[in-house]
Length: 330
Image 1 (cartoon, rainbow, N blue to C red):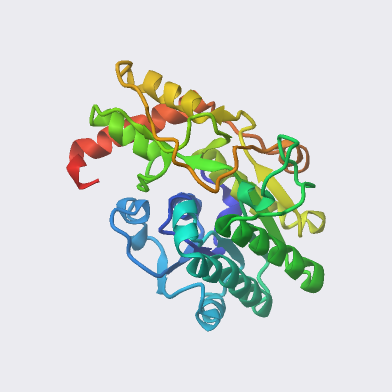
Image 2: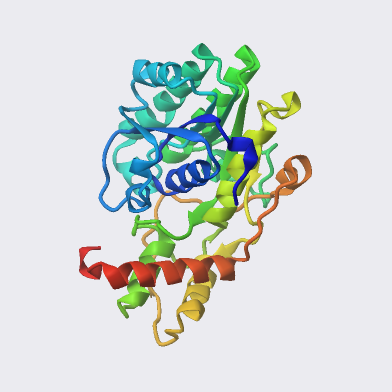
């Protein structure tokens, strides 16, 4: 949907070659915004390039770990809005290489915040995570729950989240913080994630692999709802009372991995396939899901898509994609 609010806005998106970033950049360009993106690498088969966004945005080569590059970009492109998504976002690589995870997720965040402060941006939305909360007994988590990550990825997100709060409290930076669960949807090319990996296996007529014991319970958040949530928060930052706050964006319909698997099988129609349960997941929280009550009440935002709708659109996208690409490449 075209939103007149974004006509002529000058928006800087970090992490644009990632899954969520590509969808947000696409929505913004279609809504008339002038979008500038920071590109460190050119990942193979990124949805950003598959969608032709390299021809519709200003691309700056650089890294969020370089403060001067980020600050110069905001200045030269006269950026009024920042969407900060760049992160090392996978749990296993975070365990294997914690220093790089902290460099990208923590240093990268303070660089973006500091550059935004120097250049007087009008609004900044930054991605935290449900993992920033760490583990709590009371579910679903609400925004008042303590941030107490313990493992490398979780800690990096707790730190980044608190940095955003500090820049608001100290400098009045117009920042809003999102905490989301697991995203899925068309264009996610990271096949280590549960939805893309399972759908690839289903299309190949192979029994999908589940790393955990299948009982871990999570939010599974459709990408279209996530984009709507992010841009709703960005617009709301024009209101002084919204600034500095964090919002859970979630469907509030948690599923176990096995429940999610069953729904993917139902969507595909390949009911003969069975999961291969590895029970290998380490350093992951058993159950973790979010309350979206605050976002509904304060932002008047709520998800629009049932998980069955999201999975059907996602599966159809992968069928079409693999119909034009060699599936053995993935």
